[in-house]
Length: 184
Image (cartoon, rainbow, N blue to C red):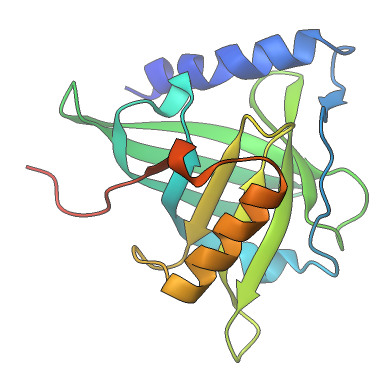
């Protein structure tokens, strides 16, 4: 189970990485990122609310991402339910800050020395300063995710994120709205 998703995630990152030098991070289309950024406020579980289609998550529902710290790296555990196989799958990756820990710009790898950019483009906070919703862009606008601490996104925040995506030439009709709920 873990191995199959790991390989599905690795293939696109491998292709992106081969465009540059080994162990370099590809950022084809940089976007403005959150600053100041506080990693402690980002740690924990996030629900994937929406994403652009890509092979390594195709057909998955109930997708979550768990972020934790292990030494100098951020551990990323992505988990989702594969509808066609009726089973859970997960992949573990690692992430590091690219330009200091006060910017929402990281490099993430699910496969060896090959990294892709993880650009936290926008974030919502609650009154206690905890991050509650996040808009992430990959190394280019072929990769985008809307994440939330809750399985449901506030409509005003949803519209704000859709507007930000539109400004990056990412159309709302290309988004997959990820079902979050019970599995049979």
